Image 1 (cartoon, rainbow, N blue to C red):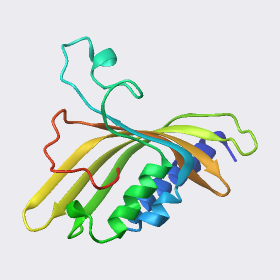
Image 2: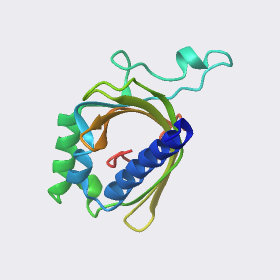
Image 3: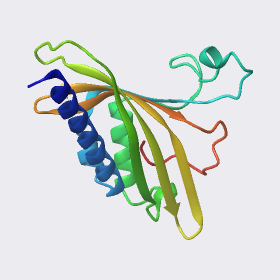
Length: 179
């Protein structure tokens, strides 16, 4: 196969992975979603700040391990969150939210050379997440995800996710869903 065809097939494979992930989250199949994450996943969503022109690169996002963040979690914490929702007595998810993930602009930024069992790639994607809760609570979140995907067997897993919201002030009452 040609390099162009290989790239096209890989692009389609990664998009299919993201569509499956969105479907699992939208259908509340959280245990299956956890299987798409590596055991050493880093799941990070910094706070976004409104900063003076020219200082975005250095100051717009809080720094992992140094500053406050909306999420700075690993597999254990994500698993605990899933288990809490599954109890049916999670105050912020009773009744359960209806959530829809729209994933677009998937771009493979870089891929590591193939090493047996260690193929990784950096992928960017944009998201729009709609959430409706109870009768009148509606939230819309837009932003970008920067992922490191790791090949695992015949598929892919998320090894690192950085979630960049396009808002600096969170208007939602809670963040009980997953990006």
